[in-house]
Image (cartoon, rainbow, N blue to C red; front, side, top):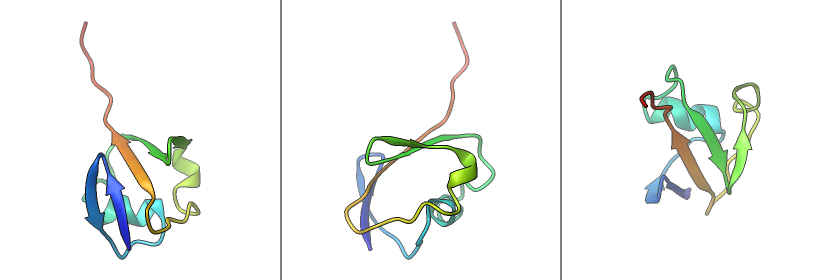
Length: 65
């Protein structure tokens, strides 16, 4: 399916957000995720199904001041 990840068109076979993160090498990363501008918490990633055309944002926290 074709989705957009952080603004980049991407083709994936992942059916869930959790599988997408694994496919992208971010399975163990501490990141925030949103699909179509809706926040998806960590416990919901395994059940959150992706659909053709979804817009996924993956954001890593930054420290600093």
